[in-house]
Amino acid sequence: MKKERLYEAIIIGGSYAGLSAAMALGRSLRRVLVVDSGLPCNRQTPHSHNFLTQDGKTPGEIAKVARQQVEQYETVEFLNGIVTAGSKREEGFHIETESGLNFDAKKLIIAAGIKDHMPDIQGFSEAWGISVIHCPYCHGYEFRGKKTGILANGDKAVHLAGLVHNLTKDLTVFTNGRASLDSQQWQRLEKSKVSLIESGIVEIIHRNGQLSSLVLDDGQQVQLSALYAAIPFQQHSDIPQMLGCEMTENGHIRVDPMQKTSVPGVYACGDNSSPMRSIASAVNTGAIAGAMVNMELVNEAF
Image (cartoon, rainbow, N blue to C red; front, top):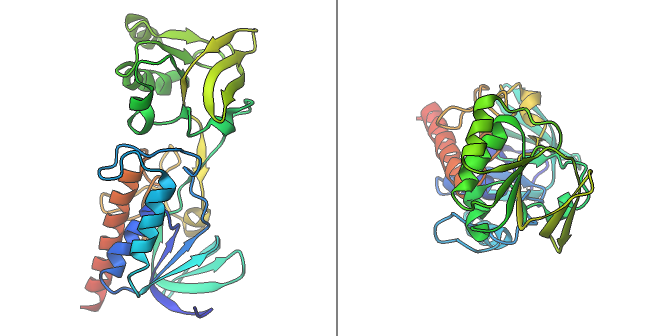
């Protein structure tokens, strides 16, 4: 790999979305560089679900096979690293990696995901993605009918409660402080017999990530099998902000249906630009981004 080279596309992030975009471009013989840190956000999750043909496999298994398949396309190159700087150039875009390597490309695809901000609760990070979970579609079936909690407040709490209530009726919302629900939201929870506890959570008792109970700041210990948590996040890469990509009010990169950002020539895919946080969604949006970058290159040259 040359230190300085003009690629047709550089993909920042080589997990499911990035690999999907790379496959679409590789199959069109585009010169592509994929830069990836090798640290996907779901590396602690034991099994992936809700993805046809891959249901129940580990995220690592899926990523390994995907990487092997994309590596068969000779115009796609891989670099293990982190992109730390990006800028617009006359011919396209310039990036620099943490190790000081520099590359240029006509187009840029941001496929680095999001970084979760874990709350200051003992045991939370160790159980995250195992029994402290974020998505009913990804994890809910495995915890169906079990005693379940939701760590959220306000609109997010009610939204999650509605989704999870279809999977288990033994459901409690933990607001981890004073509840910020309006009267209609209270009525919805009461109507569905969803309990609500405002006490703070001090500790998550678990064994190898499998939750058994929550310890509250009032001395209570509540038995649970699973806890859904709506926690804040930030973009895993600073490049979208460096390039001036418009963001949504929730912190995602704003894209159109074809995965275009507000910056011409820059596309985004995966959970950095969608609240649908799943492997299936990442693969879908990555394939769209790859195809649209190829189409843009075609229109510029043909």
